[in-house]
Image (tube, rainbow, N blue to C red; front, side, top):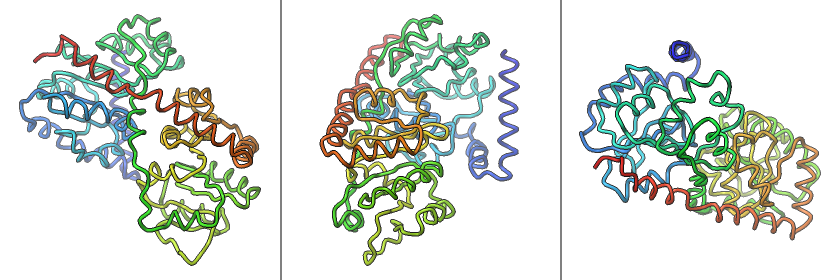
Length: 410
């Protein structure tokens, strides 16, 4: 199995190299790792806490804990990413002393990485568990933790062929999960130091500042009354249903913030809505439309407090995007059926603040209920924010547990 794993890593590297012929992301993946050995060797010989995040979403999940270590300990903070989408946006994060791409998981790379940096503590966020790095961490007697973990029964760790990768889970000093089901699954394969500590993302979403409408765009868009439905991180399938539903709700104002804001995608959305839309970047105060497209990055999370309820895309494709941001804004959240990888979906539904739908008809029914009943809409919004508030504090709890670990070297 180890041989097959190593072959798989080599094939992955070859595939990334081929993808550079057409993929800017693949090119960034390769280019960002070219001088990694020198970058590692140049780090000062201080004591480091190493946080590893697969991508931007995992960084946001671990951000509050990263900040606690930066602010309240004398560790230097090393932050690594696997994906360019995380590194490109957070390479200059102010509360990390060094930000690097994680080199490909080979025995040689892992050995050089961990022998060149004085790492005293390693923390992996959610997943992205690499065999050689974790094995080398264990050989170097470095305490290692996994935070905000969620394990599903169909993952390789629980399959008859997963013994090779199951072993790396046993190396962790502790695994902090989001849910009880994950604890049960891990204990059934021999993991002992496992506990539910909650989702560290909850500590982050509550701190997002509402959008300051300095240009008056959102205020003008809302002018004249009518409820505002914010549809975030949408894909084509989502927008198709949103458009169909919009025909039945003439007074409903809809803000669409697509996952992809390329010129081509913005044009596709405009055409789908018969060009009866405004674009944020070229907003015309002389026009009055019920559909606004957010065609820039970074606004969505701060826009949710301006809405009356939300839809979060992705649930009719690969998986849902961030449903906690609208929940933290105190509005109910509609999303598609593919949310099994995200336990917060099930928990938000159970709280009364979330609604999963399987098709446009079901979505239309939920929208009708939320628009026709102020009481139902307000109760769902209150349930959303209560769910987030109850779930806060995971970062501080985990921070205190790790700080008390006597195996961490001074």
